[in-house]
Image (cartoon, rainbow, N blue to C red; front, top):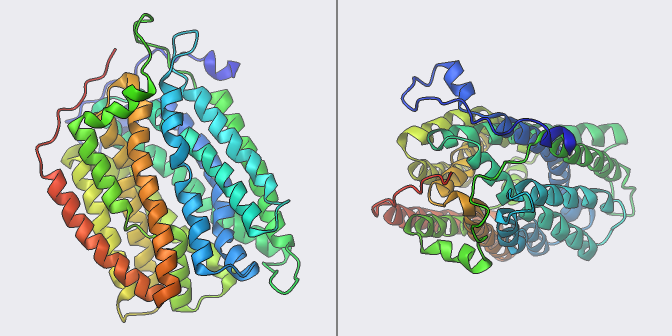
Length: 442
């Protein structure tokens, strides 16, 4: 940790006027501080590791171990929603100051990344659904611990006028890892002889993916420790650290409360990535060997659009773009439900899916940062993220149950109708007068 902590992190990011033309490359670079780039590198490496596992897990569980769609919905809900149980604690702990007076954002994030890295080799040892579910739960605990502190470090190191772009840059680097992860898993499976199992077949291909993933995850933790600096404290040392009750009381802020409500409403109808890819694969009749490549379409669109859409959010409003992103997701559902077929439909669905993430993921964090004081940034971001994660957890359970009852297409039809209603409800909430942006405390 000495390398990162010895770097000068006291110099503020060079100012960049919010009115400068977006085409000026120098202004764009000045708006993104080094801390954001370092955290982007950590996320890039970590996402390669995580997405390698995510890319093969649905195939491994459904085809290899014969899990039912309802059972997969439960595990997928754990994967996407279990982090909500610890995200609040992670955000709150990150806001508390250490002996040097600085917040513990980096420390809590490092624990989270380390915990997830330790789970990767455990997948080599567990061969039953309950044990795999337990490993996934621990891995998501690590994700829950690290997400709010990481996003807090991004927001605190960036000027408010450029947070959309900064989060866009980080998410673009993160998505580069998401793009490389499935491709790496595909190549590893090919070199190891392809996926096998079901009727007592060997699992060398899956073991190879889990092994490479563990090594890459360890590299991500190392990059965090060496190259991400601690943010020096700018608070009065005599100021009392916020309690957990203070953190929960942030929902009294009108802007944060409305944003959290919208995130929950829309999260309840956001079908998980794994189910979406399964629908695409089964509708087009793609070979199971090609399944790990489907996330590449989403990741490529996300990578290309994250920065421009982040900058657009800075200009037209982050909440407005967040809502528009869900309209794009609704269009993707509509294409899957339409009678049109062929590879062009799959490409369009994946592009819309990636555009949805580019317009919502980092944009939501940037919007939440506007409504939370600097001293409670981690807790505030955790509140919004927790609400969204719990909603998506519920959606995975409901969608898995619907799939078992009426089939994948029927379940998607119900989800699309519910999403349309939730978009209208969220639009009504966001039409209320926006709360005044909370000023940075210095």
